[in-house]
Amino acid sequence: MKNFHYNVPTEIFFGKGAIANLSHIGRYGKRVLLVYGKDSIKKMGLYDKVVRILEQLDMDFFELSGVDPNPRIESVRQGSVLCKKHGVDVVLAVGGGSVIDCAKVIAAATVYEGDAWELVLDSSKIVDALPVVAILTLAATGSEMNGSAVITNVETREKIGTYSTLLKPKFSIMDPEHTFTVSRAMTAAGVADIMSHTFENYFTPVKGAYVQARICESLLKTCIHYGPIALDEPTNYEARANLMWAGTLAINGICSLGQQTGWSVHPLQHQLGAYYDITHGVGLAILTPPWMRYVLSDETVGKFVEYGVNVWGLDANGDPFDIANRAIDQTEAFFLSLGLPMTLSEVGIDSRYLEEMAKNCERRTLQGFVPLTYRDSMAIYKAVL
Ligand code: NZQ
Ligand code: ZN
Image (tube, rainbow, N blue to C red; front, side, top):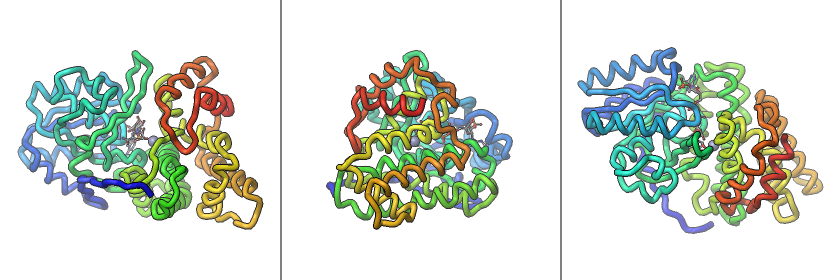
């Protein structure tokens, strides 16, 4: 296990009725920018609750609505203009990862002289930010308790993550009931995203991070157990609660501490997001099994056996490659059982931009579990065309 520093100052208010804690927003000032997506928070009555609390606190609030899934840099620019114009003190995100990510970069862009896209391209330029508060409505990205934000620039066909500890929400409200209305498809995509964050941390070349590996396995088992229940019973509180908390733990640092944290499947997926605007978790589900098959080798087989035995309960006494392949097959079968697509053509992607995407990956892909070159990325994309 490598040395690490861990500091997540985000307070979490979790559970039924947690919205009452929104009153703490008063600590951060009087003027709020309320950021949300399309109509989901209005349909579920959450918007009215938020507005009532802000009014009771006698706060002035302004709104940025219509933030897209795969949030655009234009929304960030719009939000920061509003914040500057109205002298906003705190940015309140109500929604899924897209809304929270957008709010985070708005918070930084408001106190930045240059263009917001520079903060995405170069995270070292984030030296200050307004406080961010989040009310999470979708279990998936973990944005509610981390400093990451992923923003898309449609013009340049780029989808890029930026990071600063300054972007970590001051507090997040996590009421599983707020996720009861999440569609079947988005619930499945969220489960795939949580599992992918966990895989990115679990499949690491660093030895000796035993605690982190066991936490990862628990999170994967949680998704495998509760994912199907949430699909069949969208208002099952226990399922929604466990998925929501698993989503946070998968990417709030706990699983990656002391490890080499280069990720593999996410950079491949961000290219799909940039070129085709597909749902993040769907792209991850499609790319995960071919990535696993591609990196399986004499060097990595031991980790796949660990995964197969500890997560899928496979018999440890077989041929290692047989166990590894069965574990990968089970992963694919699980995603299929959630109704997730398993090929790029199912989401409208053909070979047209594969070379460009693979080249971009090579520029950005980190030294993950197995470092990936242009050739490797091409092979993984082609395997699921
Ligand atoms: O637009 P609204 O009305 O809000 O509807 C959204 C949207 O259509 C809907 N939704 C959200 N909560 C709902 C709901 N519908 C019904 N009931 C509810 N309670 O779901 C749709 C998707 O929302 P979105 O926020 O895009 O989903 P998600 O949370 O999966 O966020 C995806 C974005 O986060 C980035 C992804 O790349 C993508 O851009 N990521 C952020 C990360 C981070 N900050 O750490 C890490 C991740 O790996 C990921 O890259
Ligand atoms: Zn993700």
